[in-house]
Length: 156
Image (cartoon, rainbow, N blue to C red; front, side, top):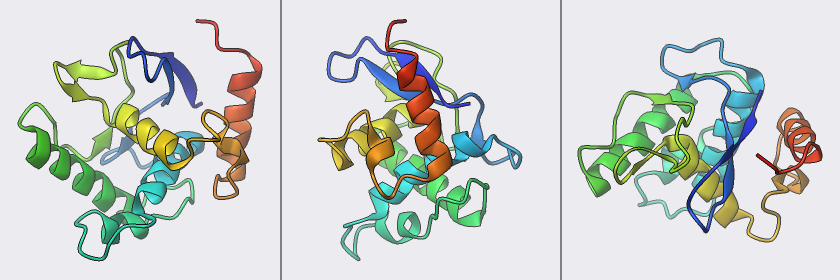
C-alpha cells in the first residue's frame, strides 16, 4: 500500500512512498504503487513540447495499475535523463524503488525516483498538494489510498 514517508528537506517534509518496487522485474507490484508511479509520470508527460525527450514516452503512460511496456520505457527514460543531467550516482535500472532514507536520496545528491516523482506531482498540482486525490486525473484506487493515509494524520 502507498505509504507516507518523512523527509528532512524543508520544502518537502513528507512524500508518498511505495510499499514495494515498481518496474523492471516486478510485474506483480501492488496496484496502488504502480498507479502512483503511472500518475506521476503521466503528469510529467502533459504539456511537454514535442521536442522534449521525455514528453513522447511519458505521454504514452496510462494509469492502469499494471506494469506495462509504456511504463517500463518511461522509467528508463526518466532514469537515463537524470543520469545525463546529474551524473553517475543516478542509477539506470528500470526500477522505482522504495525510498529508505529521510533525505529522499540513496547517495549524496541522488534522490530516489519516487521522491522525484512526488515533486513532479506537487509542482503539477501546487494548489492541491498533498490532496492530489482531488485531481480528476487521479485514479480512484490511488485517490482512496491517499485519503486513507491522510485520514491517519501526518504525525510520524
